[in-house]
Amino acid sequence: MSVSPSHAHVPTPLSAVRGQALNGRFRPPGDKSISHRAFLFGLLTCGETPIEGLLEGDDVLRTGKACEALGAAVERLAPGRWRVRGPGLGSLPPPRATLDFGNAGTGSRLMMGVVGGHGITATFDGDASLRKRPMNRILDPLKRMGAEVLSQAEGGRCPITLKGARDPSPILYRTPVASAQIKSAVLLAGLNARGVTTVIETEASRDHTEKMLAHFGAEVRVTTEGEGRRIDLVGRPELRPSPVVVPADPSSAAFPIVAALIVPGSDIVVEGVMMNPLRTGLITTLREMEADIDILDRRIEGGEEVADLRVRASALRAVDVPAARAPSMIDEYPILAVAAAFASGTTRMRGLHELRVKESNRLAAVAAGLAAAGVAHAIEGDDLVVEGGGPPKGGGLVATHMDHRIAMSFLVMGLASREPMAVDDTAMIATSFPEFRPAMERLSATFE
Image 1 (cartoon, rainbow, N blue to C red):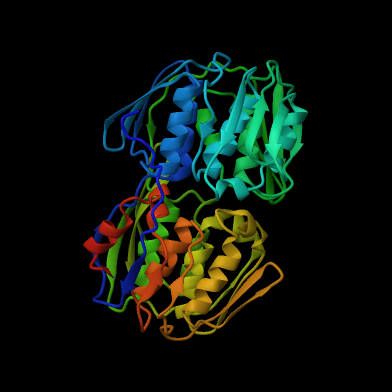
Image 2: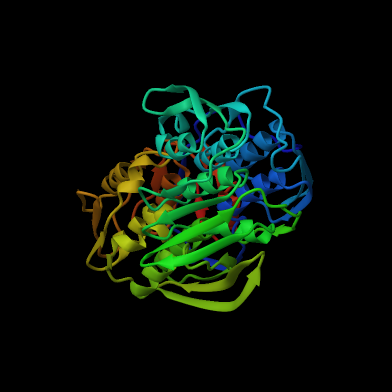
């Protein structure tokens, strides 16, 4: 791999300042979820997988490095254009060194599924933030399929040494929470099992793995069961090399979208945003808040529906966000909290328990950021309540806790708050959105 993930960590603080209206066109980086999976399916497919529009953030590059360690040839042809030649399903060699995933929760958990379904042993590790994140929900179903955890840090955390099953057992597994990572790990392990692996989720989570399984020729059937889904995967398919076109990441698009809504006079177009209904909870919520967002030119790219979004500054109104919407916008609550601070009335976001186990305790980090900006708020059980009304005072310094979405959210707030907002570190923004600052500056945002 010719682009290496970053290593040394030196905090780089930044402030965002209220300035002129935002204008222009903007294409967000490639979707992080699909970029991770593009590398993984390239590894598991014998032959050449071309990828267009890959997100070249640190998290995804770590997944690419891990695929190399498991026998793939991973080559960067041009910005966003990559080629993966994999050894194929059932033919992965054991890695010679620890798989270091940095901050990549998705990459590490999905790769645990891959290793768990192969007769190889691998050690998984990452940075201080990843080492805090619980992995038992991934390891439990893998152990049922025959994998063994040889060592782990306290509470099922990294570093973890996992011995995969040479002949994994197909299982029927009900996910304890709506989690695409748990579901995907089980399905990726089930790829190498003889027979049918079934995952049942009571609430539908993002479905990129199922779509990509079908795209690469696996026999996968998805049926609706109430609010949730049942996924049946026939093991040991002949995966066929298929090109992957990565659409723009809706989680990254969220930052310029909310910035344009709250900075007076703004009018921007965000291009090529994925409109998968399991990822558009934020757009739905903002439109309920009376955001002026027009959805233009809906089309299919890389098996996913995408569209251009025209976003104009809006007088937002508070709403009650139902808990059932959380899986479709789990990464967007920090930036939604910023929008809520500018909306008239009291916004309640329900059922945010999953935010406590993200890159940081994201619920606490959002609350602390709102406090630093002088925004009245409360955490009531698993609900976040935000009192909006006019631009907040701002003027605070936000502790990001190595969480890229906290950093970007409060920088967006500073573009419209009465006083500038500062964040203590922006280095980790590179995990998902390396071009955040220059891209926002092209729309006329001011940072210092």
